[in-house]
Length: 253
Picture 1 (cartoon, rainbow, N blue to C red):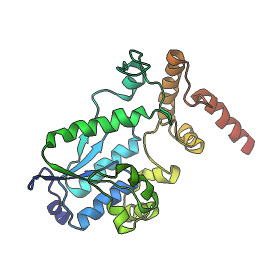
Picture 2 (cartoon, helix red, strand yellow; picture 1 turned 60 degrees about the vertical axis):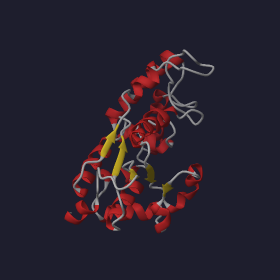
Picture 3 (cartoon, one colour; picture 1 turned 180 degrees about the horizontal axis):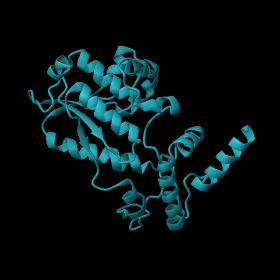
Picture 4 (cartoon, rainbow, N blue to C red; picture 1 turned 120 degrees about the vertical axis):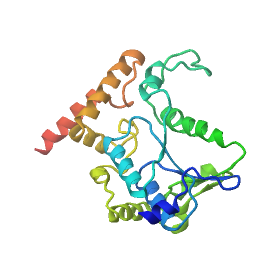
């Protein structure tokens, strides 16, 4: 681990450039970080944006990564919570100006990404005004289409350059002993546990294997229906999903 520590220059400033690794904690960004260190690439900062609604196993993974690299990550977080934006935030523009709360996110308005990730990151980077910010994003080769939206920005995609697919990244992390306590055996992606955009089969896993998280989602959904008359998804409320999943299990038996 001494080599790893020596390769990282957390907090260092060289010239007017700042090399920042965008670290979500998932398989792709984890593989990217470790390979960058192995390749002696310049790293000034490793930035993890905590939404507050990550899987508990993800927080354990973050601690394991910090121990492995011998350095703390830079953890940033919006001062307001997911619940605040969902129920209490007062909109300041648009046709809904003055109205309170976003309710659940959906494909049309992914407010959670904007409020809980993009805004804190943008706010954090303002301290480097005058620097050339060089970002590193963990997008794998088989998702190269995601790089299109960032054209014109100084963002590097090492995994694409190395020809690493999502499968390659997961196998690479597994080879180093990082397993997320089996999350990737249950889910294709390990983002926020309460995301309404997840597949039904993944939501069923949360219902069956993460009862505490599901109970929290049920309470949020109850409040959303009460305040906005809007359920978890357009096709299902949390309560309706429970009925669906129980009925499926009874059919299987």
